[in-house]
Image 1 (cartoon, rainbow, N blue to C red):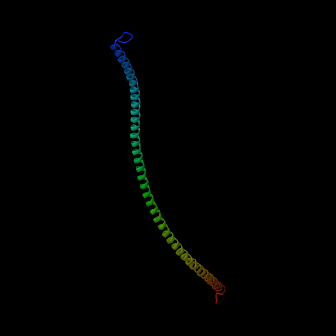
Image 2: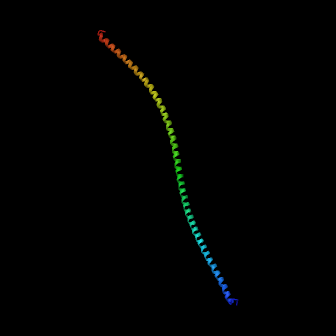
Length: 156
């Protein structure tokens, strides 16, 4: 026994009790820390799941964007092909128009030459008509003179 009259068992029990309380306090602290760590892990898992979901959505958006870009690119290629076809048709039409213009200018020149020839022939014809009219007038005048002289001189 010790000085207080308590036996070694009591001391041992007190010591064990103190250790037990210390262990319970440590366990309680560990539980608190474990709970806080578990909350932190849960929060991290939630954030990770959100990031995974956003990543999936971003992949879907990226795929859709790529598909849209590819569709627009195909439309651009198709439009370019149509435009190249139009440019070829325009160039062919220009060449045809140039050939038509050359033909028209040739025909115009031919018509101008023909008109010049017709004007010359018309002038020549007018001269012939004037000469003929002049001769006719002269013949009529002579006929009138002959006729007048026959009427005036019946004996002649």
